[in-house]
Image (cartoon, rainbow, N blue to C red):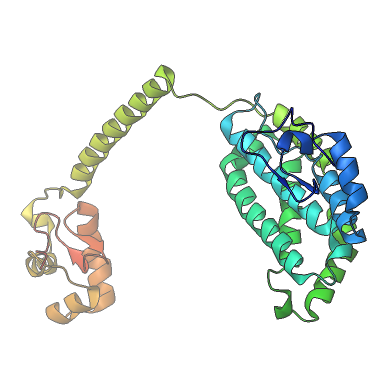
Length: 306
């Protein structure tokens, strides 16, 4: 096949007797492709792969300008996963004796599934808030299912490559009932058209943050005052305290003690000590029981921390 020379690129050359044409412009012409097919007819496997590549190329994986960056990225990533799954499943008849090609296609599915999962997580809550069917999530699940059915090393599974391909071939109709992935992408686009645009940070959002911050500071101050009121012991006339209660307060001076320790030190029945003496002191605010501190202690003379 000769070239007129009018469309040669700078530095281009012809190898042999015009059997290989390095001019990229000439190689794209229909005449060159027809002559190339006549001189080098592809075998059945190459024809099958070409048909698969032509079919999956119809799956649109480009981002859409009408979508924001997050939704467009998720759509492109999930669509890529759908495309690679269709490529693998459509290539099964040609993979029985080509383990290397299977490994390559399985790796493409695994990489696409990982990227699709990450991109979907960014928009998951927005899609949930929009409500309705979630075909993007359904498509992602199908991609994950194919990835799980297509191990990178088929020899590590029972039955090896043949069993792996058989399982994929028999289950592909359940995973992808449509003939190609274009219908799946159309449903996802219909879904994304219903998703409200992402909120943009601005003066209104900043004002809300200021109000929230002020409210938190106010509540923190109120809680601090309330803690002081609760922790402050109620002053009671000395005559209202029993002798045993005075002993308890003396024993809890700058220290915390459990009920068992108090009963042992004061030589008092544990149940009577709790019912007749500690409970009234707690009502008066003179003692507090906190296991984290070590038991009963006086808020006006808290235990010293080691």
